[in-house]
Amino acid sequence: MNPVAATPYVYFLGIGGIGMSALARWFKANGHAVSGYDKTPTPLTEALAAEGIVVHYQDAVANIPAQVRENRAQTLVVLTPAIPKDHQEWAWLREQGYDIRKRSQVLGLLTQGRPTIAVAGTHGKTTTSSMVAHLLHHAGVPSAAFLGGISLNLGSNLLLPPTAQELASSNPPLTSELVPVVVEADEYDRSFLTLYPDVAIVTSTDADHLDIYGDKEALVESFRQFVGQIKPGGTLILNHTADPSVAQAVPAGVRVIRYGLSPEQGPELYADNITAQGHQFQFSMHGPQGTVSSLELAVPGYHNVENMLAAACVGQLYGLNPEQLQAAVAAYRGVKRRFEFILTAGATHPDRVYVDDYAHHPREIEAFLRSMRALYPGRKLRVIFQPHLFSRTRDFAPGFAESLSLADEVVLMDIYPARELPMPGVTSELILSQITAPVKSIQTREEILTNAETDTNFDVLATVGAGDIDQLVPRLRNILNIRWNGAEA
Image (tube, rainbow, N blue to C red):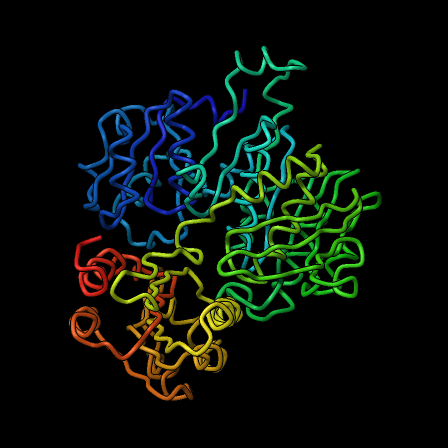
């Protein structure tokens, strides 16, 4: 048995992270005693607690559950890179000789010996992996998934595989080793190099995480290493924007399928007959497994048409026929905080809309805002953006400013530091000074909420960012719903 899967006690440092919580849920569902620490309570940690997982928020050795402190040899500790090096619990667990592994290492071990579908890319991987998981699940293909976001279809970031009894009664009977696992393959800290996929999707290789990689070439080299680990006879599904050298790094015998929104972009896989009707996109896909017409996607954005192209190609590889794909694509509802509609047209304000999105890279923000402009032409668009990481702000300030300038008004929050310490001269002002939108400002949370109660100088609101800006969403939703609809949301 896998030594990780055999450990009765599992303790998480940073259990509230989206990837960490999926692992915590997997261990809990498989009979392990699961507990963990995180810095602050969130809806996700509260959900874990409601599921029977013990979570605490004060960094103190005494808060580590007794069963963990008393059973060193039978405990696995799972660590997130966001935990600071001076963390007391981490230091004590190291001193005591606990088996401490990174999240990516554990995910790599859990997927060993199983068919693996890994979705990588500096942006688009969460949405695309959730699409793959949904398509397979909707079509009844036995599968599992570890996702980097909350799938609105699954209601979770984890899809558990069928039980052994369910697999034995399937037609034909299966064993767990034959069930494909969909995983979001994170390039941060080269985490995805613990994976050896049968099918890999690479959605993008744009520069990011330069605090880790130093320059884009080093980042691209990590993607080359990742696709070099695709198993013999496997498949790489590669976005047309990815660095061309990535396709050249696959092992002999691995098929490369390039995809895009035209035959020029994706010679092997492309979409055409693309039409937008309200929030819905319709298109046809043409790929190695044939053509599928009349696909209807309820999640807006041309970038999401591309994401669904890659996901549907995986569906075809796993046997989905055109009718199954049409039904599954039409049923897809998206991922929480990925183009998530918080409020739509109210009775008294039919033109008002509030959307929340996780975008935190200039290209992601550009794709999101261009989609918003296409959906709501002529409407006044206000964007509230929280920069994520001092290093990312330093490296991409001009790009952030350019993409945010697609809005009519930009409100910046202070930088969310996550794992980083402040850097001299790096503040939100670095972005603000380069924004060309007609109205721009830096505001505190309190100012944002106060202004939302009285300011009517916008039609469409978007909150954007990867930090803790999501904590504003319920309060903004209630304020705006009272104003627009006369009731709390």
